[in-house]
Structures are given as structure tokens and as C-alpha cells.
Amino acid sequence: MASMAAVLTWALALLSAFSATQARKGFWDYFSQTSGDKGRVEQIHQQKMAREPASLKDSLEQDLNNMNKFLEKLRPLSGSEAPRLPQDPVGMRQQLQEELEEVKARLQPYMAEAHELVGWNLEGLRQQLKPYTMDLMEQVALRVQELQEQLRVVGEDTKAQLLGGVDEARALLQELQSRVVNHTGRFREFFHPYAESLGMTRLLLTKIPFFREIIVSSFSCEHCGWNNTEIQSAGRVQDQGVRYTLTVRAPEDMNREVVKTDSATTRIPELDFEIPAFSQKGALTTVEGLITRAISGLEQDQPARRANKDATAERIDEFIVKLKELKQVASPFTLIIDDPSGNSFVENPHAPQKDDSLVITHYNRTQHQKEMLGLQEEAPAEKPEEEDLRNEVLQFNTNCPECNAPAQTNMKLVQIPHFKEVIIMATNCENCGHRTNEVKSGGAVEPLGTRITLHITDPSDMTRDLLKSETCSVEIPELEFELGMAVLGGKFTTLEGLLKDIRELVTKNPFTLGDSSNPCQKERLQEFSQKMDQIIEGNMKAHFIMDDPAGNSYLQNVYAPEDDPEMKVERYKRTFDQNEELGLNDMKTEGYEAGLASQR
Image (cartoon, rainbow, N blue to C red; front, side):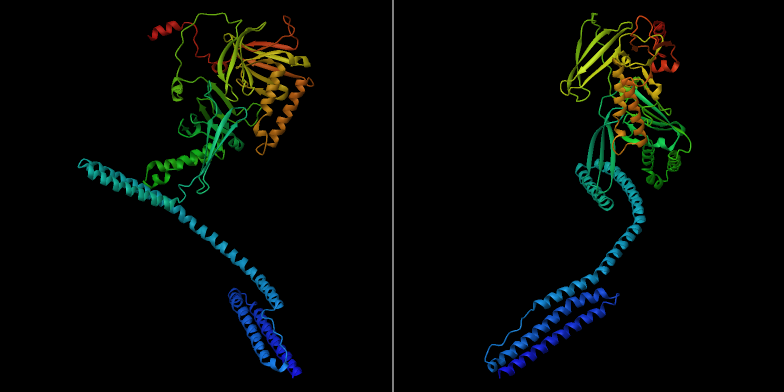
């Protein structure tokens, strides 16, 4: 009986395993057959993966339960406990997991294709909605105009009703206020859902090469994309106003950096076009950016003008076309930036060489310009008794030009041998250690201008004393270099000291450093610096020319009182333009009493 029970047990186990093998083979054959249909593969796989593994597991568990029950009935025949089959075989579970991963790998290409198809549909929908967005903006502008007109009429009616009673007027005003808030909220929510979201403002203190420090403020909103850039001068109002006259001849001139302050007036004489002072915020931009900003300002209210059939809309459109033609530089035109505060700037791309297309003029402000800038004339002080200040050092309080900390400036009247008296002012800051000096002429403007030419042949020439006034320009022909008037201010130093100041002014240019530098310009500046070092060390001969129309500059003659064989001093009569720049053409020093008496 025991052997018969063992045989029956082996037969039933073999039959159960064969049934499970056939069921599993039929299950995967069915999956292989259905995977060829690419048109319905997603639906079939999802249904079969959810239903077939569960039914197979239930069938296997049912067979195992039946086998256990049958073995329980045969236990009395064998005399020993029959073995129980496992409920969840480990090998079968691992095989199911491997084949499920295979099904997942087969479905992966179709999932990527579905994602790509959805992306294409979204992009197409965005392009289709773009025309409707522009149309919606114009409709919103018209509706706002109509709402303003309705509110104006309602406001007039409200004024009449206010005379009838205060309570009735208050109720009507509350109703109007709620209507305005409702309409405004609806337009804001419909047209600009991120209108009240927070943006970010960034401030940067930077220095413009060959100019001065400015503060650049930039605002940007990541929600709606709106951005704005403004600039403010980081210094004081300059002693004189400045006028930049730029002749734009090539497309490269449109890329010149421009600093335009609030007080600057911009003009284009060829179009009789002018942007008045204080009509725009200050900006750090280019010549092309100035024109683009003007075009944007003119186009801002054009939809409302066209909706009202305003006659000026067509003329403004014609003028906008002319401004856009200027950006192509089909013909030369003139750009004039006139700033009474003296804080505007136009870039010279050929620096340190002279720019033939750019003319810089400094002038004294008129009374109207002073009032416009909020400057007040100081009351004339009473004339004190004259004192001999030749042997005294005067001190007065001031602020450091670098850190703005309180400092003291020393001033002394000095007599230069074989020349004249000058006023030397020196400032020493105890806070940051900055030192600076400045020289002013102690006398009047000379009748003739002075041109001093020194041939540098020996290193000892670097020790010559030198006085450069504010009206003096410097030229080095061998380097094709020219330093204009008012640059570096007045200085009392040596020839070596002035050449080092010129080298520092040229080489410490932020536009020649970093990603914004021009490789060609950077090479020219490096070559200029190397040649300047050779001149300072005495390894290169050069000519040093000082041209002062006011005649208040000086270069030491080491052979004095004899003539210096390497130095040439020329006196010349000033031209009309030079007198105009010095303010001498309108100055009347003789016979002015008779003119004042006739006016009275």
C-alpha cells in the first residue's frame, strides 16, 4: 500500500506540474501573439498585465489545494505523513518578475512616442493661440478706453448729484468705486494674471572708462517677463555742462556705449527730432538703443489713437518709419546729447586715440539750466581784508573722492621759477589712504597760447618738473596718442609721473577685461602700454607735446636761463574756437561801464 500511495502521489504531482507548465506556456504564447499588433498594443498589454497573472496564480493555488486534500485522504494508506507542496514557489515568482520586466521593456518605445506626440500638440496649440492673444490685447485696450469714457460721463453726473445731498452722493460714490474695482480686477485677472507678483531689482556701482562712477539699477519679473534698466550718477553735478556731437557714418557707430542721464536732451537735427530733458529716465544703452527706446515710446499709445481715428496716428507712423531707417545707417546723421549736469557720456571706441566722429564740448551753464537742476547761486560774501598767503598753508574740510569719508584739503600758493604763481591743492584721506593733488593757475589767461615740444632722448628727462593745467592737451606722435583738455585735471608733477598717470588711465579700462573685451582693442592697448614703458625707461625716443591755449602750463628747462636744445616753446594766437571754448569771446573787460550805462 505504501508503494501504491507513493506512485499515486508522484503521478498527481507530475500531472499538476504539467498543467501549470501548459498554462504558463499558453499565457506567454498569448502575449507574444498580441505584441505584434502595434495599433492596439497599449490597451491589450494593460488589460492582460492586470488580469492574466492573477488568474494564473489563482489556478496554481487551486491545484495545490486539491493536491493537499487528496494527499490527506491517502495518509491512512501510507502510514506516514504525505509531503505538502509549497504554496508560492520561489523560482516561479522570479520567472514571473523577469517576464514582467520584458513586457515593460516592450512598452517603453510606445510610451516615448506618446510623450513626443503630446509635446507636438502643445506647441501647435501655442502657435494657434498666438494671433488670438494679439487680438485680445487690442480689444482690451479698446474696452479700457470705453470704460474711461463711461466713467468720465458717470463722474459728471455724480458731480451734479452731489449738490442734491451728501448721503446720496456717498452711496453713489461707493457704488462707482466697487464697479471700478470690479472692472479693474477683471481686466487685470484676465489680461495679466501675474501683475501683482514680486520681481527683483539689482543695483550695481560701476565705473565707465575715461568717465566716472554710475549706479545701474535693473528690474526684472520672472512671472510676466517685464524688465527695465535705469542709471543714476554716483557723483555730484559737474562744474560744467557737456555736449556730445556724434556723426554716425557706419553700422559700428550704432554699438557705441551711451550714458544718458535724466537731465540730458537728445536731438537728431536731420529729422528735427528732440527728446526733452527729464522726459525719460536715465539709461545705460547704445546709440541704437536710444533710437529703439524712442520708437517704443511713440508706438505705446498708437492703438488708442487708431481706435479714436486720430489724425496724428498716421503722421506718427510715418515718423516711426524714418527712425527705423536711421538704424540701417543708409546715410550719415548727427546725434547730439546735451547734458547741463555734465554726467552723460558717449563711448570713444578708438581710445586712447582721438575720435574724428565725436566732438566733446564743455560749457558754462545758463541761469535757466541751473534752476532746472536745482542749483542756487551762493550769496556773494563780504570782501575780507587782503592777506599775504604766500607763506601759509590753508586747510578746508571736504570729502574723499574714493570713500566719501570726511577729509581735509591743504592749499598753498607757490611761485614756480621762471614761470608764474600757481595754487596747489592736496587731499589726504586718513580713512582709506587715498591721495590726490590738483593745480590751479594763480593768474589770468595769457594773451597768447603756449605749445611746448620736448624731444625725450635720455632717462634723466623723466625728472623734469611739469605743470599741466586743466586747459592743456598732451600729444605723443610716436604712439598716435592725444589726451584732451580737462582729462586728468590740473597736475604739478614730473614728466615720469604724468606718463604713468596716462598709462594707468588707459590700461585700467574695464572694457578691455573679462568677456566684454574686444580682442583687437585689447591688443592695441597692450601695445600702447609696452611702448609707454619703453619711453619711461629711456629705451625709446619720443616727442612730448603740451598745447595750452590759456598759456598756463609749464615744463622745466634744466638749462635755465639758457635755452634747452631738446625743448621748443612756441607762442601762438588763439583761434576763434579756442577762445569760445575758454569763454573769452563773450567776455568784455574794457569799456563795459559805458554799455551798462546805456542799458540803464
